[in-house]
Length: 244
Image: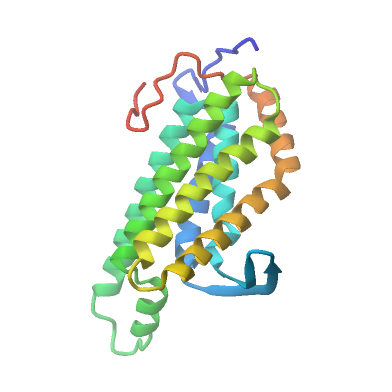
């Protein structure tokens, strides 16, 4: 595959499409953390190795897998360097949101406002949940982008479906293991932890599989409009390198 070298930063400004995709990515991350406090349950299913598996999931799963899909789009079209910057940007924006939500909770409420406890219940973050969420997001998101970038070179840009699903299996697996382990280890039995990891991981992967046709459409559209199809031959793949 011949690499197209047009830069997304044309004439000192990022393209409107790149900015739109970035904003959508950041919005998905912040929204997922806010609504994750609500739990819902899918109908029980029976698997050969698990009896009556209960899919109890946070509402954040409705939007969080979207961040991986957008991450796939960013890496496929704009490259690992751009995707890495966006992942760190979303991490920073999420930290800012958490900080001000926390500050909003600790300031004294007005006497006529009697919803302080509700605020704490819905928007309050336990430290372990935050650490687990941040660790899982960073490791999983960067792994997803890294794998997609490397396999694109190995496959010479073919089999996008295999690259997006394969990278999601690894990235979402790491995310689920880190988040559940850090947030709930010691508070829940080992068997329950394994079930939580498995249910979140399988639902997220199935989400990716279901929207693969849409991913093809979006990637094709962006490549055509941006005249860009980045292959990361000479890009430093360190997750901590933000400038190169």
